[in-house]
Image 1 (cartoon, rainbow, N blue to C red):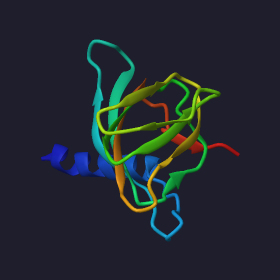
Image 2 (tube, one colour):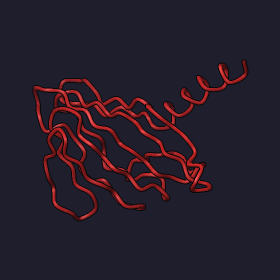
Image 3 (cartoon, rainbow, N blue to C red):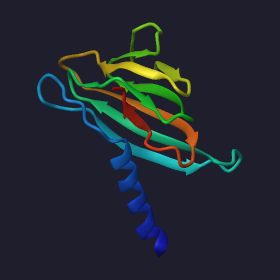
Image 4 (cartoon, rainbow, N blue to C red):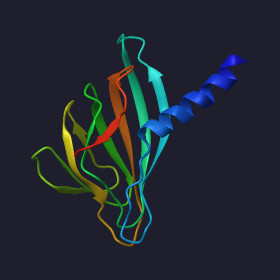
Length: 139
């Protein structure tokens, strides 16, 4: 019975920690939806966290970093995502393509490459259990 109460609270807390809208040119924003959060039993202190990021046409995330311990694998589900990590190449990723971000990386560009079509990606984090927030804007 207690699990039924605790799990929704955890999801709400996770969503409020990582969800942060970025306004697109037409007033729409990106949305971040938690999909999975589980401690890794064979790697003490680590969790696997998965979020789905949906970008409205023209939407972008501000430059940001992730939790200091986070290794991230990003996989494009639909649309086209323009991305740059650290001083790497700026590239447009299409469905089925992916990239990774090492711990401490600066994600300077993350946006929908289209002004007319939405785009979605999965961001998969391997992160220390209590390393929050998952995303922090760069000042």
